[in-house]
Amino acid sequence: MTGVANLFDIGLVFIVGLIMALFSIYHLQDLFSETSSFTIVKQKPKTEEMEIITKEGKKIKAVKVTKATVQGRGQRLGTAYKLEDGTMVYVPE
Image (cartoon, rainbow, N blue to C red; front, side):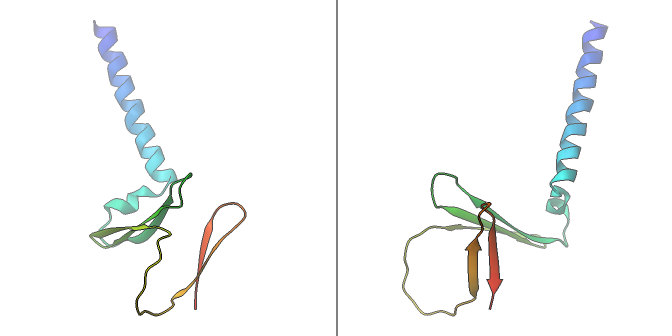
């Protein structure tokens, strides 16, 4: 039974190490910082729906974007381009 407990401990250490490596690779430690600000854009592959997640300090806001047309008054902020490799680039005016 002692051997099984040691295997369990080794498994836990491996899982914690894997989680720490993933956080480091994708720079997810900014999620826990109170002073960090970042924006994540998620797009569903088969639909044109996108979700924009922004974090400014402690405040996190998620906005869903669709192709639906709206009417109203506003100001143009810039242009977004989709490149050949699938990445999106926003160019402010």
